[in-house]
Length: 210
Ligand SMILES: C[S@@+](CC[C@H](N)C(=O)[O-])C[C@H]1O[C@@H](n2cnc3c(N)ncnc32)[C@H](O)[C@@H]1O
Figure (tube, helix red, strand yellow):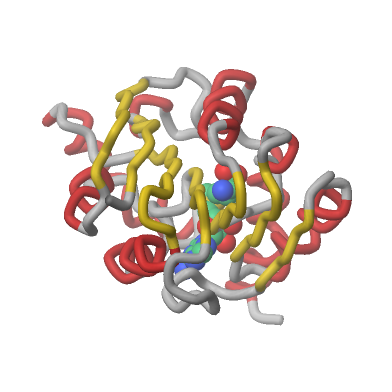
């Protein structure tokens, strides 16, 4: 195992399990709690979202490319009260038919995928008409000083957070991919990770495939 894969498969899942505090965990729980029916979550990470799914979930498919993340998520997947199906792959090419899911979920994942437009168009494709897209993401700041810092830190962020970028305008990408955005909150969360919480302005929202 090379240094890069040792870091991304062993160290980064361990870090991800420990970053964030009660307020960021509560936001993830809010995002997930609205999902119902047959649900797809992409970028599951270590599975910290799983305990927040409600009784209205019938089945959950998860897509996550990292073996190290799957290893930490396994027990949480096994403990779910609904049927689960885990796929070790990226969300750029989803192994599901068109119009399969009632809801799709992603928390802090669109910052890390290499091809966000492709992923969003896949999410749109596999969602049923009228289905909901629940998202919680950190995004490019609209404050010039903060954005300047995001740009300075970004090269390091990409290395130490395994491809995560601070400067992506994810709201614009979501709208451009065909989702109607029904709800959107902009949130500054004080317990986001180093180097500084202000580098992670959040959007929490629900999109719809019309
Ligand atoms: C910052 S973590 C967030 C994990 C989790 N959603 C959470 O809230 O804790 C980003 C996750 O996206 C995953 N990821 C990276 N590229 C991906 C891709 N192309 N498709 C799906 N997931 C991806 C990473 O492996 C990682 O687990």
